[in-house]
Image (tube, rainbow, N blue to C red; front, side, top):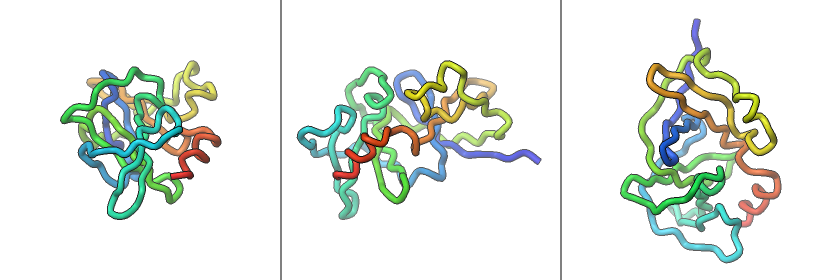
Length: 150
């Protein structure tokens, strides 16, 4: 019997990415972000989410994709990373993708370097390919420590 996984499909530029739905706490419309001096370059700042301070990371900057202006489609995807909430800014959230696990290939050989350890694999559908991200591996140990300051 096939095992299905669900991923929230999101856009960063023209490319489609997926995050395991079990890692996502909520999806927010863009809100005002308070900048934090001397924060890492990929950290846009912090927001107050129901009384909790949440660091906000521009996922484009973190993944080395050219940053653009925020639009009405820009969203903040709040994920739970080992009990800590972090918001990722993405260009758009499309829908939930339900994929048979046999349709997810491991990351290509060129993507298995230390810089790309956060790519779980590539989901193939009839229309497209979606890069599956492992949000628990996006940050290096030093970056994770820097985020713990918030």
